[in-house]
Length: 152
Image (tube, rainbow, N blue to C red):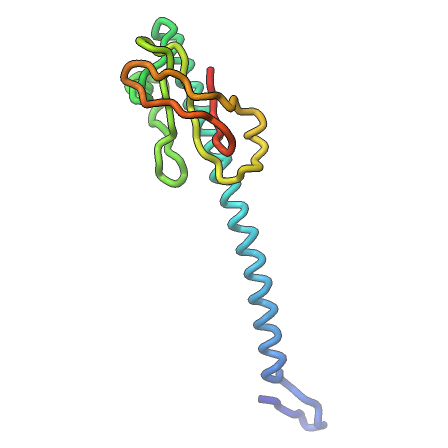
């Protein structure tokens, strides 16, 4: 609807002008949402890396207190004062842990799959091959990218 002032000048917007503005706003909002999804992905990967570092620190504390052996599972870390709770992947799954070494766990392999295969953190992980799981531990798997994996 167009309004005209007393001198014949136009006041208001035409329907075409309004549709153009709405289309521009729609395009800009879709660009913002795409950027937001990328930021969320990076945030989840950063949390995964930080969680694995926290678990790794707890494993090293356990190792020092338990005759140079690692636990077969992550559960004993919470019964001591090593870590209050085992962190979970941002998608709700547990991180993969395997105690390695045969009868006693003298080694471990800790891993999580990152969403961004080009994440720079993957340049500094161990990329370890699967090892022999110790008694009571889950089977091991290779840590090839995009799996971020840690070993002692």
